[in-house]
Length: 234
Image (cartoon, rainbow, N blue to C red):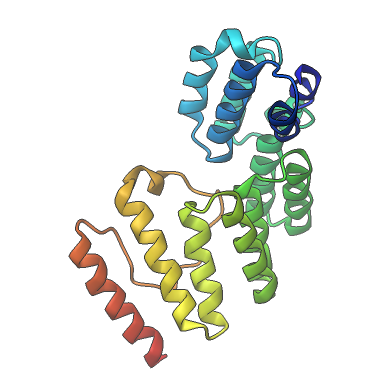
């Protein structure tokens, strides 16, 4: 198991631990937690994880480099990202951030390559998957975008941005029922955890709805009814 962990192959290590002799369970748990914070772009929580689980993480990654990597992710500096692109633990997030930078520079193909690199290192990196869906949606390939957003939700069913963008894609396909379903899912997630509003995928979200910040459950249903009426009138 330890060699798989050093290579960043956490899911294989997890399967091995379930099927065979136990290995470094504490190290696996610490690495999985760190990965979850990175996938969700919650760098402050990742920083806390590095401190809290330092003794479990130290055999597998350089803690000082990991702290510097978090600074590079926050700065969104392509030069600062370079040392971490091929790191088995940090590379998926580094490529995701690089993809966002490329989009902002207008380099769509470079962004696509970066997001795909991210997924080669971490196939479940749902922000990279969602960002690829955004590129498909912007290119007018709506069915492909739907496929990517649904794949992102397989990795994290509670990722609100994927629900939002899937609702946009379904509206463009004329699937109002599915569009409203995912709008409601997004708002329920944000209602339960308002902090998720601060965790963006990195790319501008399509915004076809009037759904805004909700302070109560009854207001959610009022807004959903208004959205259904608006969608049907278009």
